[in-house]
Length: 372
Image (cartoon, rainbow, N blue to C red; front, side, top):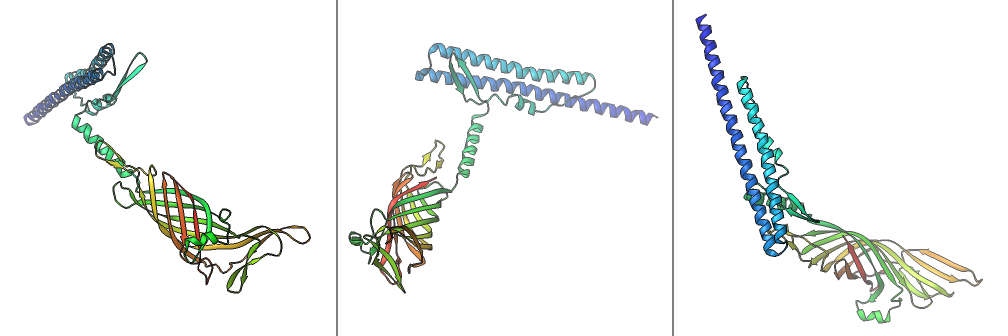
């Protein structure tokens, strides 16, 4: 019986000592939080007052407004201290009550951070004007590190590859024997022979970080039209395509070939990249001069000749002739563009002949739009 009583006494003493230690520990926590709240609010008030004085020195606000702002921020932080310290005092009262009743209540430090979560950014209105203070009560080094992490995350999210919708149009003609002067004696009408191009491109920078050097590649569809001078048409004679005079008066004679191309260009985009105060650099494209040099390879999807004329009986005839007219199926060549922002002057030249067993090559010149 004595042994049992001894065990009970020791157990009760252990519980009492344990409760005493927990009580002292909780009181110490609350005391530290009260000190932290007071220091944080005073530091925040001090930083805001410094900000108001700077605005006054720069002439952004008057002395009257500065005094009003100082009173506002002082009143605000006084209320914050009263509210936050009051919460801790209530916790202390509960702790003392639980101590008296033989119970010990534990509190979480998260309550402090929760009650202060809206204390980082405040605004005050004087008259019709609102003044914003992005002043954080946290440690200055912690704020700087948080900003750096934010910028790093934003920089990582920056896409290395962008996409553009491409539309181009202009004049279409041919060169004989790679001689540019042959345009002066071309058998095709210069202004009425036109081309149209629709496509989609991807633009990828070569370096990991922001730069002005890119690889531009994609797919496009071209409609190349050639209109002959005079009353003439294309005639396929076995393996030779000839140009002959038509027996009736033509109102239109047009040879159209549609092709699918895969262009690749090296592009220099001289847009000035944006530099931030923390050292990060971000790509800015299609904001300045752009130069693209490259080429293409593709194949023809179809060729047809459109004829419009009035026959001997006076009837108006619209005739479509489906044939390849001895055109090469595969085509390849060089192309370049030079422009500002999204608009460029565009030149495209086929390196392989337009018709088999000839030295006639297609050339196109016009305006090109690259729309992000």
